[in-house]
Image 1 (cartoon, rainbow, N blue to C red):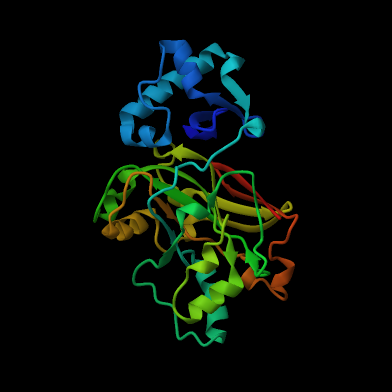
Image 2: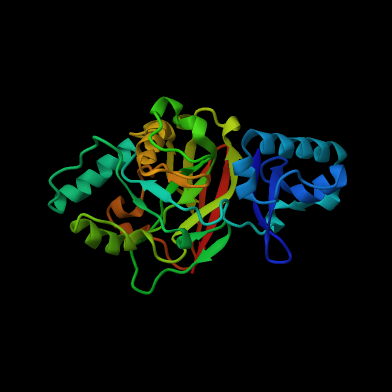
Length: 313
């Protein structure tokens, strides 16, 4: 099921389910259909309640969806292009992003950082950073390039949404704790990131306002039994700059979730995959040809999930 948070006319949220063919999707207002079918949804009309309700709530939502599709009443649907999406999970308590976690991206990064005097990159366990919840923005957001940022980069990623509170889970059981997957564009201020990484840290370079486009929706885990088979793709103004299978991940989602569950993870927390090769920073001969500029339109996509659009101002 493709399901996300959409804006209500009163300023709140409601759940929308995406149906139809790619390019002509429609979004079902789940609560409106439930009222017509049975009087109300059997759970609160929020993503939080859906995740916490686990298989029972998903079964209830699927029942409403199947009934609504069989009826085909346009009063319950909106064209996807006219839908106002919210971020798929409301202010996750934790969003942890893997770094240098695709093999070919690690190689291009190592070449750069060796020239900067870095002694090496080890991979005994996943490395990463925190994405602050207030930086997350939804599908079709316009993100302003900060005035002190010229090296404004893109990074398409897959993000897993955790289904339940977990701590120290084994990798072999980790995927059983995933509610679903969505698309993440890890926007980066490289001049700030480079300065921070010389001090062996990273924070500001990933966390300016709007630097976390996430969405448009979540595809539930039952439709993605093996996330290593997902393919990510990123285009800027229609030009493909990243395209790679998640089979190139050094640590797959089982290992990422298992490792970071040592911190304790909650329902709705997010774990991002890292990005493949092709970022602007490592483009030759001139990365400034590829850095994001006002007027650019970025489409970060994951096959089988969706396309996340971000405009740069």
